[in-house]
Each structure stands twice: as structure tokens, then as C-alpha cells.
Length: 125
Image (cartoon, rainbow, N blue to C red; front, side):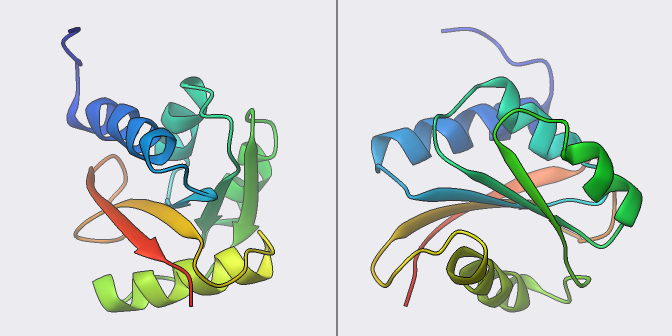
């Protein structure tokens, strides 16, 4: 068992492990700076990483990251809003159907770069 240097790195590793164990259809990330998406991509999870950011420059930079499908998203208001937007993203961008497992990761409070601290597993409806 290796020790992770930071909370965001540990969350990114756990996100990939959970997605693998549950055979998730996608990982959905909400990010301001793009660092969480890059951390997750570093683990090469083998499933699509859909990264939404309200920052156009972040979306452009993420286009160069392995396995990441970046898109411009609206700012997240709260956790319920995040889950709703994640499911919409899965349907719209990932073309996922009903009953697909998605793993969501983000930082709370929202809009603070580098504070990844949340993993949520949801089923698309």
C-alpha cells in the first residue's frame, strides 16, 4: 500500500479504483483548474473521463490530457446541482443510457481550485 502525497491525489486514485471495481461507464469531473482531471487521467482508468469546467482556458488545456473529454460547463451551485449536471453530461456527451454507473468527483466548496475532496457514485436515469 503506497502513501499518497495529497488529498486530491488520493481522491483521484480512489475514483479510478471505484470506477474499475463497479465497472462504471464514465468518470465525471467538475474542475476549475483542470488539475483533478489530469490527476485522474494519470491513472489511465480505461473509461471515459468527462471533465466540465466553466473556464474556457481549462477546457482547451484538458483537450491534451489522455482519455479526457473536456466540455464547458456552468458553475456548480451545490451538490444536488452537481449530480443533476453530471447525469445530464453522461447522457449528452457520453451517450450513456439509463442504469449506467457513473463516478463523480469534485471539490466542495465549489470554485476553489485544488480542493478535490468528494467522490459520489450515481446511476443514470
